[in-house]
Length: 152
Image 1: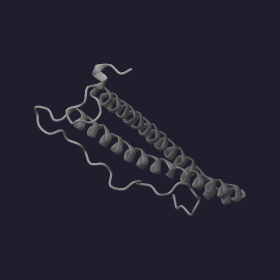
Image 2: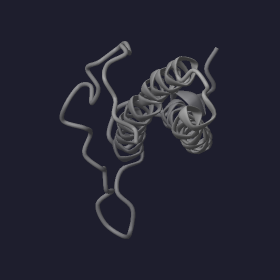
Image 3: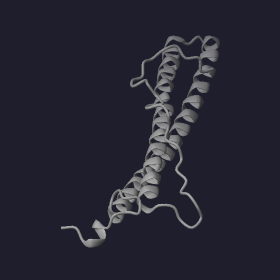
């Protein structure tokens, strides 16, 4: 059963204040979780990219030195192709970052609208609500395919 506070309508006549405040809190927690996820993805992407470029540079040195010592360069070329394919997979990080930022803007817009509608304006003036993203989805691609990539 709802208490009288939970049933108290907001000044805007929408959700009860307690329900609106709870909903806003949940939206903000989700937004903060997405922000942490975005930082984790960015850190992992940067680390992976650094390691892949380091390995690629070493493979290029081996490829260039192989003929001098009469080594077969085919395995080296295969390893370079495998590294290029792994870098293609890192495009996932870019797409995921775009989706997270887009979702964060949507969540923030919802939380701000709930706060404005439920609690109204304060003595400082009208509540500011950041515009929601115009497009429904910033990334239309939903899978990764290997293609030609020039890394070096």
